Amino acid sequence: MAFYENTLVVRQDLPKAELDKIKNKYNELIKNNSGKVVKIEEWGLIDFADKIKNFNKGFFIHFKFEANQNLLNLIKEKIKVDRSIIRNLIVKYKKLDTNIEYFNKSKSKDEKKK
Image 1 (cartoon, rainbow, N blue to C red):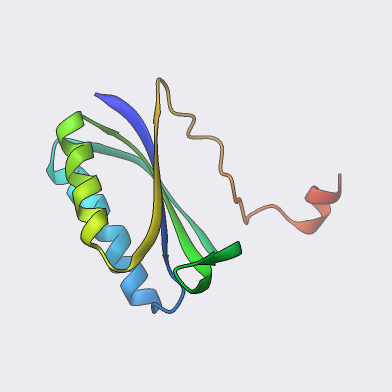
Image 2: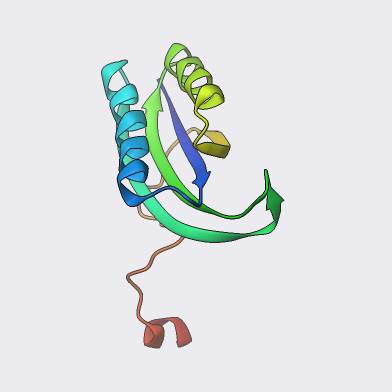
């Protein structure tokens, strides 16, 4: 099995309950098909530089997981038909770094200034 990161960009107009459903849907899909979810990060609502499908913003959900090629193809098929997802990116890695969080909200303003 190989390591992957999958970033989903979800429509900005969805309620929190729908976002949780999407996160759980792909989490269960990976777990139920011989994959292993290592980490899930919610990056929140982020502004786009340019409009994507008439949206100015999107919710970002980032998965780090292990999977085989069959599971990866299944995930890609599900994302194609999911109308809530406006963009996604899947990247393959030899080794996952679970310590890096790209949009870590826990840092205080004082720590960022140093």
